[in-house]
Length: 293
Image 1 (cartoon, rainbow, N blue to C red):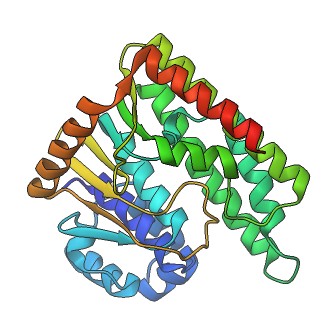
Image 2: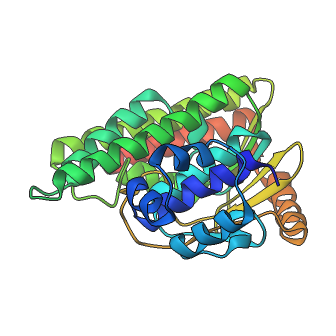
Image 3: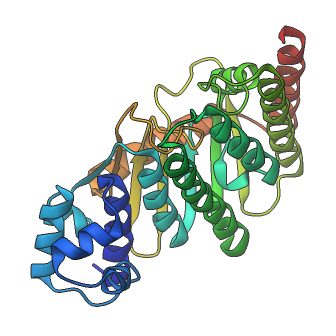
């Protein structure tokens, strides 16, 4: 286990705990700067890992990347996903309406506006907006990492998920003013049309398919790096408010999980629509959604 990997998991679990860095550092008996150095991959003693695990209410093995990692806070999960993707050579996604590393600036702009509109006035608003800014920074980092490192992406979108995304728009679960909801739907359509263009172009290192008929029961990702692979299962979409508590995401590098998910991914990819036919079907879904709205 590399210290950089431990640091990435420490940062994600710190965010999952909801505690401030200052609070953890004080209870650990170190400076905040020292804690941040641990998160950046500085050498850390096993006793310190044990004490951190106790503070964060996780097992020491979880901080070492052994077993299954669990996340309930969307922002913490996205941070952990960012760390895994940073060292990836291949990202395999099954299910969902889009592949976030391929999302546009416009997606993030509408998401930021939606999150700000959904936060109620009151004493907690400033803190919630700050959490939103931090989460948006993590999402932006995921896209920048893909743009810089260009890992291979193989994604099979779910037809039903795409249709729901088009009908609800970005951040569909939030109660937004009508004009903003209309912009969110329009932004979703533009994202799907952009994916259709990529399907037509078939650029090197990027393959996108569309599952029609039998849909993936639950979305998952299989992210491969040079040294190991991770299986990611999650109901926590990038669009969720950072503080939302609606499900549990799981991440594991267990060999049996990797093999099982690889087998399913290969079967789904084999049966998926691809190329021009899939692209045209995405465009037809956009047209149908526009008629319904």
